[in-house]
Length: 248
Image (cartoon, rainbow, N blue to C red; front, side, top):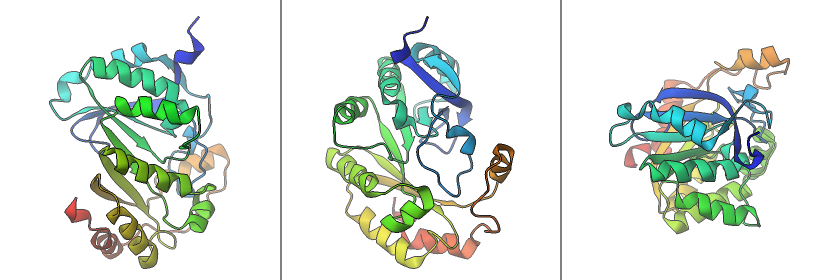
């Protein structure tokens, strides 16, 4: 029987990811998320403890079959769901990966982050074996963030500041939602916040889309943004200008 402490629950795997970190990536989508983002295109990843169980060695063995495609820039990205909900498994997986000289990245919304123990010590261990953090900042305004995701953003912004203090490379991701985050006031506030960070290598504006709506329907969940259309090209370019995407 597998040691429960070494089990990670995986929703799905992608062999040739090109948008979740530098180079060609092996993407591991972990199961479980505490956020309930109104625009989520993967509500099927929400359930904690669901998915396919793997040990770190089993998962790394699968990933390394594709190592020849990674070249010098690629590697492994762990996404979700919310990967930090399985931080013990992540630590072991990334420790194994670094032993093999593999570039490691985490795509996280930061919701589980806290400076309290035992998470704080585990976080420091994870950062020792993490090369890049892709941090999703859903909404800069806390009240709007709560309405959008069901959670506060205060610990997420603290995570961004702590990553800056430690000098850990970060890519910022921001979903542009008409009637929500696609608001010049919020975009300027986000830009001002990002300007205080010293470690942001890249900012990505991710236009809202409706490709995952069918999953809500399959799960019998009412889609909260029904009728909202993706942002126009002009609004996307506006967000990129405000967030100074070209500078990263």
